[in-house]
Image (cartoon, rainbow, N blue to C red; front, side, top):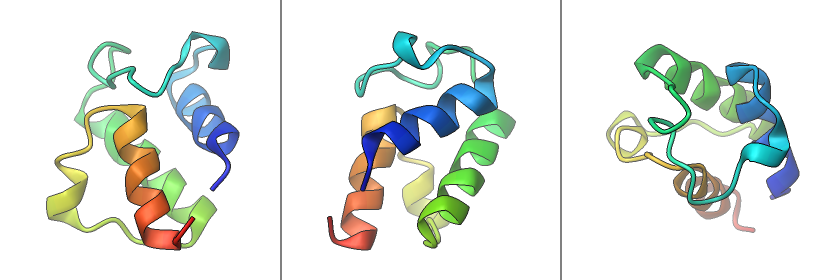
Length: 76
C-alpha cells in the first residue's frame, strides 16, 4: 500500500494540499463531513480494489485509520 496514494486521494477529495496531511490527521479536523468521508472511502475502494465494510468504515476517523484498513485488506 502506497501511503502517497492515500494522501493524494484525501487531498484531491477535500481540495487541499497533500503537505498539510499526516497519518494522525482526522477527517473532522480537515472539515470533512460525512459525504466527504464517503467520497474518500469510495475513491480508496476504487484505487485499491477493495470494499470497506460499512461497520468498519464508520470507525475510520483519521487518515491513518484508513491506511490501516487498506493494509489489512490488501495484506501489505
